[in-house]
Length: 360
Ligand SMILES: *[C@@H]1O[C@H](CO)[C@@H](O)[C@H](O)[C@H]1NC(C)=O
Ligand SMILES: *[C@@H]1O[C@H](CO)[C@@H](O)[C@H](O)[C@H]1NC(C)=O
Image (spheres, rainbow, N blue to C red):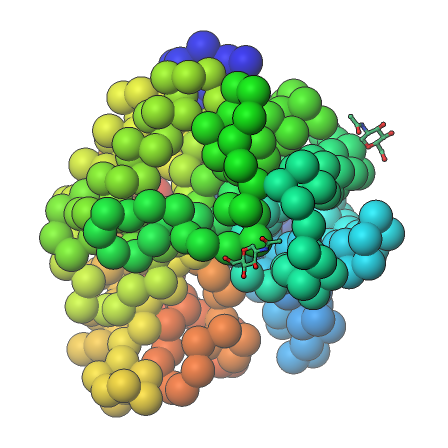
């Protein structure tokens, strides 16, 4: 158990160890590592091990030169690592860890407990609350034992909160766990198991439509803050929250994001921007007409969001979900990421580097 306010140190220590890093100059990575932020924050991207050899090595080369933290897009999730009960397959997740280690990057684990993409043996097993509790504890223990000392942080629970009022917990298999002992719900069970297995990795709750405490996301954002504050107050070992941020280029709630980061920082809870991408869709098909103006708008928003993170001491990672438009989970032609299909930089990259440079 950590006292409130004492949890900003471990990430800083882990990041300092990375600071030898990249040979490349004039990259996002070199900009953050040369800045006064180097000991506080990482700049990250989700990667997929299936692309490490893609595009004549441009995928790997760009990821390693531009970022100092990676997350596996899919391969560390429950459905990938425990397809058969109690038979663990960490090979794909290990490839992402190996990439991080080879390139002197931090590794961020994602995720241990989520209502979707469970293996069917979990969802269709008809397990009792007590059995599900043991399954969840066993999964978390085995995964964190395997990655002990290797991950700077883990998303312990992902996307648990309902999207509309009164913002209770989503109905899913894990929510069939009825609370007992010190736990109020399955989320407490998951965090306790994670802390027991690895006392040093930072433990995060990650969700979407929560980044800004103002505007359309205020309700869910407030519900998440109350949940996390309640966890802290009753001694559940949560260190941070992930703000996903799959939003559009017209997103105008940056001040609400900064204020939200600040209220977490004020209670000793770190924030990571975890899954940022900015779609420039102008229609339901997600397509947009790309232009210099759209590029400018998107770049400004990437830079403004990074500035919000820089402004708040408790914001310790700024991470996009992918980094090149050539490989993104978003369908259509919406140009969501900071690098073009051919890995050349959009204006967003230089604009973000300016933010990092002026943090000195
Ligand atoms: C667990 O929850 C799911 C989703 O709410 C439900 O469909 C399922 O029947 C429940 N399983 C058991 C064993 O109660
Ligand atoms: C956690 O997993 C490890 C590795 O499989 C095992 O050695 C250990 O006994 C487990 N601990 C608990 C509390 O189940």
